[in-house]
Image (cartoon, rainbow, N blue to C red; front, side, top):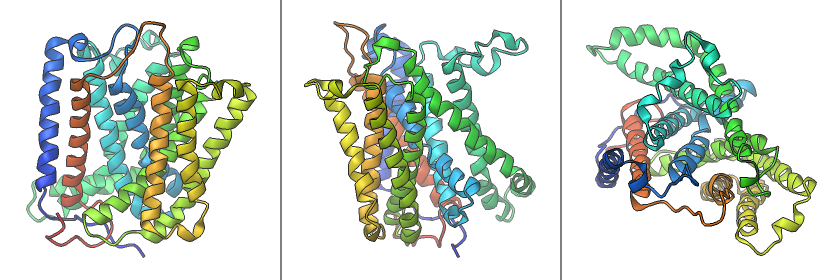
Length: 398
């Protein structure tokens, strides 16, 4: 039986965390500068490339990397695989942070962010003012709602900590809310499964709207389905990778047997994606295109071969109990997913001759700052709240 989740404990601002804090601070300063000078002087974006790394990485890729909670919720609560329950809370924390940072990135990316509040409120009381046929509206509403749902799903971890602390000013209300959430959690989880299913597929639908500006290798009617499978695939891989890294960083006993069992689900989703992706290319008669000597064919084969490698690796059931082996396979799966989404949103997007995009240094360092802030918050939460299963690490686990 898995042990109860407990805080890891230990010092938060270790030397590596101070370095990440510096990067996060630099990103915050550059963000202020971006708002002061506007998108034009601070980014490589243009009318031809209205989105860049903040959307391709922080939103499109970042939310997929944040789908560990979604993938684990389906596995535990739909397929009734309760043995994976100890992996759920860390996955939800990673998801909550991923979606929150994606929301921050959208605020930074939008030209007039003070109008974002019109998205959830613009249709009230006249709901007819919404364009209900808009895939972008669905993505915006679902991402906003799912971010809130994730923090609600995670909140029992905070309430458990506060209600058990004698004299804590939130002790009484935490006990009440914890009991209420225990009863309502099934409905919250159901919403937490529905929302990513909707907006992850709609991220694929968005690129279909670009029509002939999206290269034919990626311009498929199955793009929404492929994006959905891709996020599940990446979500499972992130759970494996996060668990392996957490066990090493906090000197905890790794959940090797559980991760080895989970590797079967990861292998299934990887092969499912490959079969549909390659079948789609063949059905749409794109074999000649993927063998052309150009950058698009090169990127297609790069993303495909990087995914084939871990898919083949995970067929070896005898190696699944090797944590290093699982970590390498999960890392390759994540890289493959990143390549597919980057290709779909940036590399394969063709606005016309004479136009190009490459992120500026401020764009990149703002992204580095967002990633650093995400890691900092993760470490702070697991050290202070019951997220990881098992006994707390010793004081030497910094």
